[in-house]
Image 1: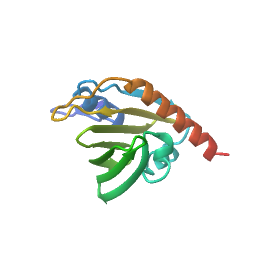
Image 2: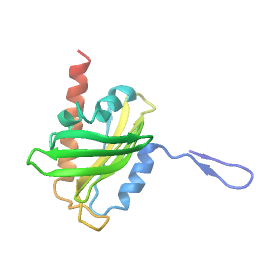
Image 3: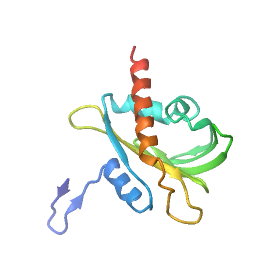
Image 4: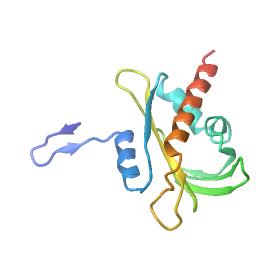
Amino acid sequence: MVVMTEQWPIAHVDEIARFRALAAGVYGAAVTERVIPAAFEAVWRLVSDFEGTFGLIEPDMRRVRVTIHEGDRIELDARSRWGFRAHLVGVHRPGWFWAQSRFLLIGIACAPEPGGGTRMALTGGVRVPGRAALVPLGVRNAATATLDRLERQLAQNSR
C-alpha cells in the first residue's frame, strides 16, 4: 500500500514482500508460498518452536538448540539427519526468520492473509561459501514438503 504525503509517497511493505525482495538477492533462492488455513499465531507458534515442532516440520533438522535469543537476534546450533552440524545466526521476530551458517540458509516469513489464514513463504538450502548464492537443487520440492508437514501438524494440533 502506498500513502501519498505532500512530499513523497510512503510505502508499507509486509513481511512477505520484504522476504521476496531479500530472497531475490540470493542466487539460486526459490521462494515457495502458500496460504495456510490457520491463524497467524498458531502457524508462527509451530514454526518458531525451534527446539520442539520445528524438527517435525523441517525433518532435515534432526536437533536444534537455541543458544542466543536476545531481542530479534538469534543463534541456533542444528544437527541434520545426516549428522552435519550448523551454527546459524540470524533474525527472528513475529512473522520473520532469516538465519544462515557457513553452509546453510533458512528463511521463513508469515503474514495474516486478508481473506483468512496465513500466507507463508519459505526459502533455503545449501549455501555457496563466501557468496550470496544457494545450490538450487531440490529447493522448491523441499519447501513444498515442509509446508505439507506444517499443515498436517496444524491439523493434528486442532483435534
